Length: 413
Ligand SMILES: Nc1nc2c(c(=O)[nH]1)N[C@H]1C(S)=C(S)[C@@H](COP(=O)(O)O)O[C@H]1N2
Ligand SMILES: [Mo]
Image (cartoon, rainbow, N blue to C red; front, side, top):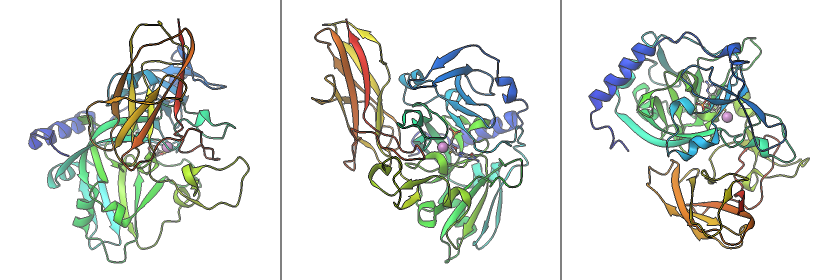
């Protein structure tokens, strides 16, 4: 897990320096983002026209879904360049309009309280020096990634497939921090809150909770580093929760408050929002009622072709490489299958380097297009629990957990 942390002292120095340097960030996109660019893209569904923006701090070119609070999607071609999504192209999603634009890294404190032996108030320096640093490669994916493809359409951010990314997260185990506070025997859940808030007091603060055993599993972590750098402000500087294998609604950003609870959290964001039907693949029929709902939780496998897209042309008889990314969801990728005949025959793709079970995994295959005409390429991941992507898309009113087998329609010329 921490094999890349060859010099822990050096690593800590780097993040501390970064925190000092970038501790306060003044300006960010705000309304300046609108009209700052005329470039646009067309996402592959109705009403998919979007502006491309460069107006947000520490961010390169992103697809603009909304300015305040920001929703920025990663342009899909970014995923063709490597396993790790660069920090400046990593998607951004916030719920509440007030996000601090300046954070004093020296003054910042992470507090731990509630049903614990002793309350903690930890500085960034303490987090980086008093706990063992750990690193994990993990996919951060919005529950509503790909929501724009739902048919019939559903309300919510109309993302294409770019509300996901994979990074190497550096930080400390949540377990170690909880152990220092000393969790009481009656603890049931742990609740996480960040520095963002609603402008009007009636907007419920964005807070999420995990069961106590999950919080203490040694994998859930408090990260201060992302791909070897500090976290971009919009991805949660200075610290965020990492919940490997779970949808990113739990990955609370600008995390400054941890509360140990002795009863299940019934706040809005746990009890009312981010609920999925408790059915296979969170799948129901439009209009269906009477099913049981549960908080969204573990991710499911997905895979994508990243170097060819709908409408691309390839030459008959000329070998091309088909390549892309896959992830297993809450466990590793066991295999990636691909088809060049619309799903009649499937073949194993070659898996590339394994960066750990929660990471993207690159894959490739060699494809020699046969007869001329339209052709449908497909890709399907099977995870190491034997779970494979479904052939038919799921549907639910929240637009959550899409993971249907993807198709790319190309022309053989
Ligand atoms: N503090 C805070 N953390 C948050 C959120 C938020 O609104 N506020 N949104 C969550 C959701 S729903 C998603 S998809 C991820 C997005 O993470 P990113 O912006 O770093 O890509 O942040 C999560 N953490
Ligand atoms: Mo999300």
